[in-house]
Image 1 (cartoon, rainbow, N blue to C red):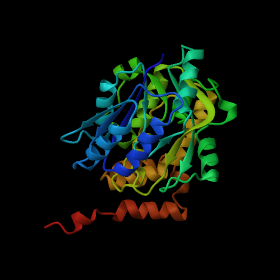
Image 2 (image 1 turned 120 degrees about the vertical axis):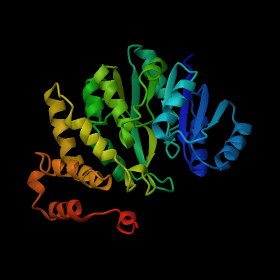
Image 3 (image 1 turned 45 degrees about the vertical axis):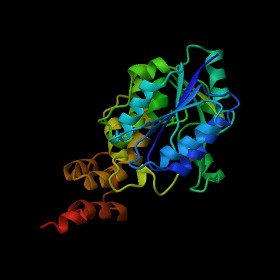
Length: 312
């Protein structure tokens, strides 16, 4: 029987963590263990997990990182701790559908050559309600539709276009033990991990079925003023080498999409030179004279961090 370790990195979200854990415990195919890596500075999450352990029919292991390990190192610690032969990463604010593990485990049982399996994700609000329209658009944008079911895309294509999700996938444990998250990839460490999996040619299988719930909230990393997610992704994409017409098309599409946000993030990070470089790249320069383009030029020229304006 396949032993699945579900790994949950968490930070100051005790209430949402409870929901995430309960979605794991409600699986039709029970996980072997849950391992929680907590970067919170307080003991609130620890107390919540203690209560969950009392009612859990499976092992819940809790590791409180003191000092905090931050995102990538926390995940790598969890990778090292996993005892199952298959592993799933689940964000502390996301949820699994009840049949998620059963569906993905069946993929591996039908085809042992598969390295990673994943499905579609519902988009949910802060309060956990499904947004049907956004869910459809979201999965279409990431090529999680019937046309690309199974192994229709190569591993590199799947990773490049982000069909491979940032969490909720099931992966062979031996892979994550040797290919961990890159601590130099900033907030795009999950995308960079998937990209390297694709480059390495690990067989990816997409199930055209809703298996998870992805929460879009104002408190997510991508909405942070200090986020470098788009900037890091732009860097990865600009250095990628497409090996098929599809990957060439996807690369161009993603670079065009990421360029505006990457410019803003580069300025926020104090990398004005990089912001100018992206501004005049083929992925943005035709938009410079648009209203948004002019705003970005002004942002590059005049934005200063508030704390620097008032520093003695």
